[in-house]
Image (tube, rainbow, N blue to C red; front, side):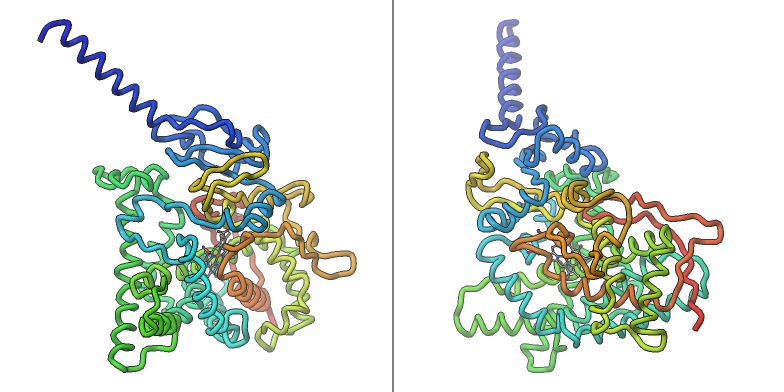
Length: 498
Ligand code: HEM
C-alpha cells in the first residue's frame, strides 16, 4: 500500500469515526427546556448525575428552572419540579403525560410484556381498570381486607415480642409480613416467616429495587456478558428471572390448569383475572387482558405491594428512635382511643389524628419514591412555552414537592404537628403527593394507607422502641435506588407494661 493510500484510509476512518460520534452526540433543540450543556456520546448526561440524583436535580433546578431537560444515554428526558408544574402535566395534561418509557433493553431480554407499570395508552386503560376492579373485589379499602391484615399484624407483633426486647433488624420480618398482605390477595396464600424460598424471592426483589444495575447496563444488555459482571447486568437478569419465571409463572400455570380442568382454583386475584381472560375469549373480544401478560401484571403488583410499605415502616421506626416524644404522643392517643386490650381497627383511624399526622410526616420526609416512576409523552406537547416531543421520558420529581421549603417550613425537620391545624383537625395539603398524582397515581395507595395505620398502631400499642444499649441511633441518610431505603439498623422493641 502506498503512503497516499494509507493516508486516505486513515482520513476516511477519522471522518467515519467523527460522523459516528456526531450521530451519537445528543443535541438539544432550541424549543426544549434548558439543561446541562455537555452531553457525551452514548452516555448523554449520565456521567453528571452523581450518587444522589435528588441533589443534582436540586442544583439544576436552581440553575435552569422548574422544567429542565437532559439526556440519559441517548434518551431525551424532561424533569418536572414543584407542585404547580407536576400538577399541570400529570393532572391537567394527563392525556399527554401518562405513558411510560421503554424500561430498558435489559428487561426486554427477560420479557417484553408490559404488565401494568410499563403499559401505555389503551393497554394501560384496560389493564389498570381490571386490576383496580379486582383489587376492590378482594376488599382493597374495605373491612374484609382490614381483618386479613389485622391477622397478619397479630403474627408480626407475636414475632417481635419473641425477641424479648433484644436488639434486632426488622427488615426481613417486616418485608415478609407486609408482602403477605398482597400475596393473600394475589395468590390466596401467605408465606411462613421462615420460608427460605420466599426469602430468596424477596432478596431478588430487594436487589431489583435497590437499582443495583447501572443505568448503562439497563440500556446496553450486552454488558451482562462481561466477565465478573461489573455492571450487575447479569445479576439483574438472574433476579428478574427468579421472580418472574421461578416464583410467579408456576403459580399462574397451576391456576390455569385448575381452572381449565374444572377443579377449584383458589378464589384470588389470579383466578379473577383468568376468568376475565376466558370471558373476553368467549366474547371473541380483542383484549389486553391475556394469559400471557398475567405473570407480569402479578410481578408488578407483588413488587409494588412488597417494598414501599415495608420501607416506610422501617423509616417510621428510625424516626421514632430519634424522636421518642413523638412515639409517646402516638402511644398516649392509642391508649385514649383504643386502650391496650383490643386490636386497632380501621374504625379507630378517624379518631387518631396524631398517629395519622405522624404517618403523613414519615411519608413526606422519608419519601420512599423520591423521583416517582418515569412517565413518557404520548404526543408532541406544547408545555410552558416549550415543545416536548412524543416519546420523551418525563420524571415527576416528587422530592421537589415533598421537601419544598415554600410549602413545608424546615422541610428536613421531622414534625408531625405540621399536619394538624389550630382546630386540632388534619390539614390535607394538596402538595402531599408521596403516591404521585394524576392518572397513574399509585394503584395500591389505599392498601398502603390501611397497612401503615394497622401496623403502626399495633406496634406502638405493644412496644416502646429504643436504640440498642450502646445508644446507637439509625442514620437518617438512606440509600437511593429505585426507592429510598434506610441503611440497616437494629433497635429494641420493649413490651409496654399493661
Ligand atoms: C407507602 C407505600 C407506597 C408508596 C409511597 C407508593 C408510591 C408510588 C408512586 C410514587 C408511584 C408512581 C406513580 C406515577 O407513575 O406517577 C406508584 C405506582 C404504583 N404503585 Fe405504589 N406506592 C406504595 C404502595 C403500593 C402498594 C401497597 C401497591 C400494591 C398494589 C402499589 C402498587 C403500585 C403500582 C401497580 C403502581 C403503578 C401504577 C401505574 O403504572 O399506573 N404501591 N406507587
